[in-house]
Length: 196
Image (cartoon, rainbow, N blue to C red; front, top):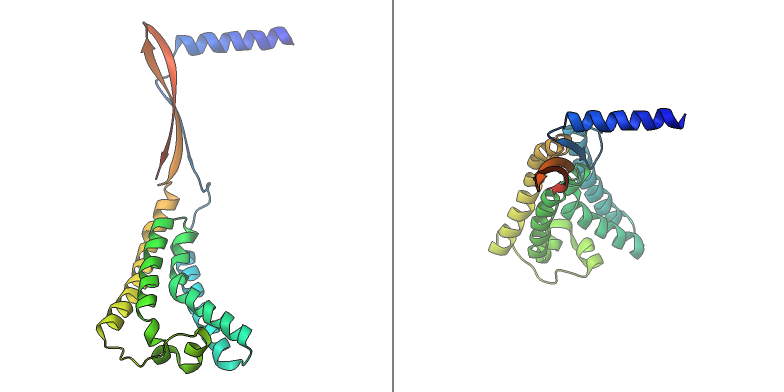
């Protein structure tokens, strides 16, 4: 048995030396072979946005318990700031998700003084913000509203690119073995790369 294995190893070594390969390459997407869909990414983004905002506002409006109101207010903030980015996160496209999330976070901070006007007195009192009356047409408010809307639109539009990039292995790991001549001898060179 051992002689047979030794013979096979010897023959394999001779045959591969007689017919050297120019390159051996292994490319493996990090996420595996599982395909993701745009419709599921869009569904996740909209669900995390609408359900979080709706549940949060309802909790603040219907319950008198301070803990439930605070939880509802923070759930609403989650829906506003993070919700739409979850579609990009599903497709493992974190840069696009964070860009949209950042725009909405800045927009939310600019509009903190309009909490009473947008969500009502009870919501503003729960978060202890907005002690002044402002108009939604003030420059600061318009910029905040624009950033919220722009972040939402950006994430919804970028879902196609995020899912396509995931499915084509846009971010992958590769290992290559290439022949190189060193001192008139052919030697294998192993290289690894991580592409973002």
